[in-house]
Structures are given as C-alpha cells and as structure tokens.
Image 1 (tube, rainbow, N blue to C red):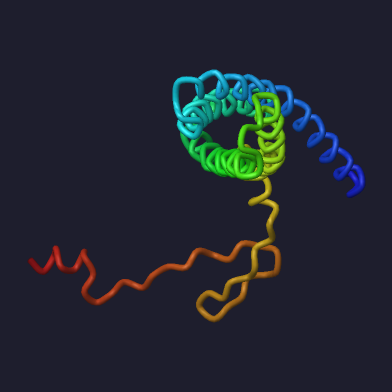
Image 2: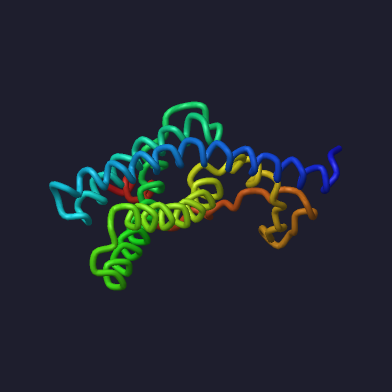
Length: 186
C-alpha cells in the first residue's frame, strides 16, 4: 500500500508534468493569439479582435488540453468545451481590463508595450485557467473519488446499517391511491 507521502509526491509530480504540458500547449496557443489579436486589431476594434481570437484559441487549446495536457486521451466533450469557455471568459475580462488600464495610463503605449501588457495579463489568467482546467474541467478519477467516500449509515425501518456498509435502499410504501390503483379503478 502506498504511503500518504508517496501519494503526495506522485500527485505533485503529476501536477508539475500537467503544468509543463499546459504551458507548452496553452502557452503556444496564447503566444500565437497575442500576435493574431495585434494583427486583427488593425482592421477591427481591439475588444472585438480579442473576443474572436479568444473564442478560436479556446476551442483549439481545449482540444489540445483534452488530448495531451491532462491525459484524457481523446477529443474534448461539449461539457469540457463549455466549462473551458467559462474560464476563457474570465481570461478575456482580465486581458481587456489590463489593456483598458494601460490606455488610461499611457495615451499611446506602442505595440511592444501593448504586447507586454497583453501577454502578462494572459499569463496571469493562464495560471488561474490551469487550476480550473485541472481541478474541474479535466479532473481525473472523479468516479474513484466518489467510490472512496464513506457512506453514513442510514436508518431504515427502525434499524441502522453497520458502519461502513451500504444501507438498504429505502422503499416507498404503496399509497392508497397510486397510479396503479387509478388504472385499475377505471
């Protein structure tokens, strides 16, 4: 049987490996997104360009994370895409707020400063996204964690199940006027 310290070490090394893959996949997509936003912002308002690139990059990154980063081994489900999109909305808000503050502080900051601020805000948002994706969207062993939880004894018909065992399912007493009786009465 594995010790608690061994489990912690394995979990920490798994998180570190996940983070390295997250940085490689998500960081690569994020870096490309930064340049794509700058290019698209030449023709569209910056907030719209950021929204379009965020949507496209979130779809791509979610697929990469499902296949490589978090070891799901297949395509991302719709649920995972929706949850990932929720975290992307937060990242979008952070990058927009950072750019808004930059333009309030500096009238014409220049492309290099804009990129530095955008990528810095994206990196901070990325750390939060990693936590959400790892702990919620692509959480491993959900069924195992649910099975490990101990069940509390439930009182059924005046008896208690022994501690650590499943209590028998509660049965509902037939009612005097249940659907079966209504059908027979008709």
